[in-house]
Length: 328
Length: 203
Image (tube, rainbow over all chains, first blue to last red):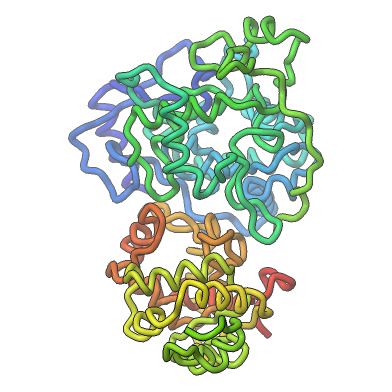
């Protein structure tokens, strides 16, 4: 872990250039003081999958202490990987935390949990107040997991926060480290396009996620998560922002072949994925137009827009949780 | 060619074109022969098995034994054989070499967590939590033998097997060390191939 500190020293000297965003970028936490985000070009890269800066290395699992706190960390990690089984009352779909935060929340450029830990509390425009990490995680359950928020102090949140704290050990609190959040690709040359995205999806995504985007299972347990429809994240989730989806996809998809899609392909396919119906935004006011105005007023947000003659934002019909409970 | 043979007939006695009986190498109940690296066929996905026979024919899966055999099978032979073996109850490969506990533990870690510092996802992210596979594309690897699994990973690496969609396995195999290959083979070889006992270790 120690070499990371010296690397960071170099980073700080080089100053700030960064374009790296944190978590869900449309509602990215905003601090009054802009923290340094460096993208050093003179620092040699490590063997990591993605380019540029060396990344913070969270401690290995073997460093989880063998005590009561360690038990909590392990529980948090287990919830992170098996969310529907271990946090069932709060989960309404087939996803798990690790669906979007790869490598159990460790992987740079996949909104790693260690980065989130360093970033909160923070003001969020999404709900217009300062959010603690626990409240931020409540949002994950409410939107990304299409479930309901565990109450503050609930053992699910305590365990997840403990795991996040463990992963962030040794990292500077309040800093935006390289690899945090999803790296938003440069704006595409051509206006992002649903039909081009459909083609990318067919060629690069459908093998795993299915031609209908509904994912695939093995022996009853979800392996490839559904990307839209009743068992995916709802309209209020960060991944419903095309910007975030493009960032995640570009850096990480197809799995094991991150950064092989062009920026254009990433934007196009993100638009395609985010132009499908999914469960209603829990903040729905009763009017799609009004809900768009209040919560989705961005060109990167398809809620309330019409695609191929279909107005998006009606919400997928709820579906019995046929897949739930079958995992593990 | 004479009237169509059933999958069972070809498996047991070969076909009129001279293809040998499958059981010669793959065992009487399709259990394979671990030590020889002949895979278990019983309980594998039919679409996957048929695709492998096509790959042996068109040499996107190069194998000195199966290449010539597959060329003696007609399209309908391949279809009925794939269906026959898919319908047989999954049974684990026998006669496997013993692996060290350390190798199994290292393999389990790769299977469940991957090695993302080298860009390697967890095997389970595509093959399922206990290696039972997904559809015709991501085969069941639980309960195959150490030799078979490591041979395949080496073939992906070398490019002698290149029937993987989008080059997924070639890319991953290139990132695996020889130790990784042995470890992951050791781990999946001790998992049971039978869905009823998912994740359970062979007795």
